[in-house]
Structure formats: C-alpha cells, structure tokens
Amino acid sequence: MSSHEFQLEGDYVELNILLKLTGIAGSGGEGKHLVAEGLVKVDGVVELRKTFKVRAGHVVTIGDETIRVAR
Image 1 (cartoon, rainbow, N blue to C red):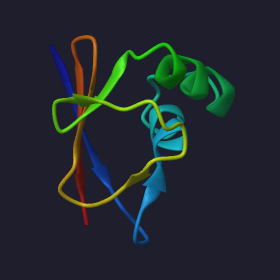
Image 2 (tube, one colour):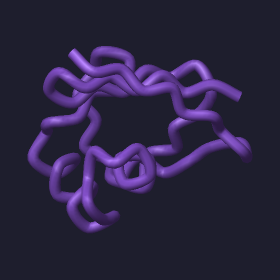
Image 3 (cartoon, one colour):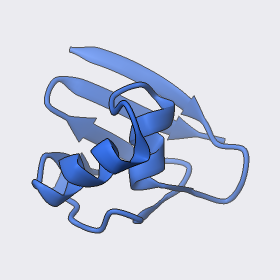
Image 4 (cartoon, rainbow, N blue to C red):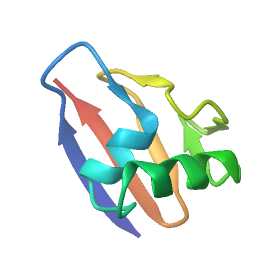
C-alpha cells in the first residue's frame, strides 16, 4: 500500500485533478476515467463525481494507493 500526503493550497482541489497531481493518473482525463469506473473512494465511499471538491481532511483511495489531504 502506497500513501501520499497532498498539501492543499486553496479551499479544495477537484478529484480528477488530485489524481493527476499525485501521479496516480497520467492526466486529468485519465483521472476522470478512473472516477467514472467507480475505482475511487473518498472517505471510504465510492465517488462518481469527477469534479468532486476534495477538501482538507478527506482521504482518497484507489486500489492500494491512499491520499491524505492536508492544509
């Protein structure tokens, strides 16, 4: 299992962009595809909204990858 810490610079980051910025997805488009396939969870719940606003305190998981979002 791989864990990433993401430092938020604003109020939120869109889910597909977060996947791109952490290197899990090669592009925002690939991030959208991963979300649409139901492979991404936010706080343990499958999230299907590609532009879901991820905020500080959220934990995003995809497969064995975990992203903790901090401010």
